[in-house]
Image (cartoon, rainbow, N blue to C red; front, side, top):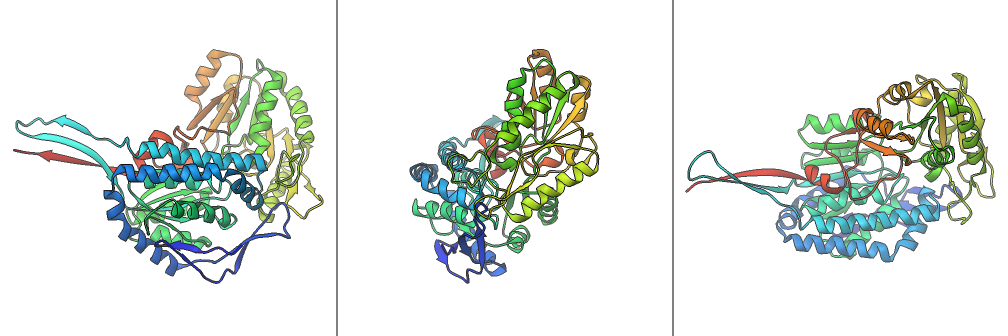
Length: 476
């Protein structure tokens, strides 16, 4: 499949010199795509700027209807799109189809929000003066999205941007261009006016050009801390609005009173499903001493039993890493952890299966200390480390260490501990007796400290980033 840029309502063909590879079978090229550059970004931003006046002034019903059609179309094609996503990103078919359905529901949710944008009327302190406020669109929004949720994250950025009257330039991850291309095609097919939604494929230079372009009014980025810091600095330097989601090193606290089977199931889900390639994954599990050894043994047994295989195999529970470089990073961190004193209980090996994919066995590393790199740096793979603590107070202190603060969880039957944890853990999202990964599409998403910067994404909070308040004074 050869892909194109979508600019000003037209598919712009160019030399499709780059390839996206099926991580379940590296011999298969999923798509070929052009590596865009400054010229494509300039054309896309110019188109979005021209389209902004008409789109922002359109009836909210027009915007709502478009998003509703997009959501319905995604639902109708979820099986085919799920297969494409599984081939290109490596999620299992069930996980991939579920992600498409999530994207569909995001568009339908924001179809409703397009009609709910509202302001306020206030009494002035001066006689004969009325005051009112309303929210208006920002302008051209640049979206830079990652490979691990190649349709859900573009959806949760693009849907509110469009719902509230902004125009969009999307730069998706270079590992998953075909999924983004499919989404762009549906948005155009459903009636988006020319220039309202633009897609520029390519690598880092495309993202950098969007971030530094003077006519891009806001940037929403999801990716690594290192890249996010550069995006933030460049956007702030020219006064653009910026929103950053930059991952996590999410703690799951397991107390001695927890139901052991439930705690293991929660850690297994949060740590290994979707190949651990979730920014909310439970990558470090903090376990009270009284049950630590039993928990580690049970988790290792369950992890070793997980079926690793190609994404489209119905028996597969854990698919491949997204790329060769990601697999190498996963294995490198296992080596770092064991060199620093961690004990590899199970897994952590590259697997040679029937296809030439990027497969590894899920790894459990015990005996780690809070200050080890494995407990402070995002691995982004099926790798779970455990930390032994003496009691709840130490568990909370360890959970609050580090630079990240996206998601945190606790497994306990003690309501008082659960209440204390949710108030005192330093994270933007807190899960009680649930995996740290797995969030609803209609509620705010985001973290604290080095995980996030700017207003929250998703749900009712999205209006804060994608609109600005105008205050109007009316005299006699």
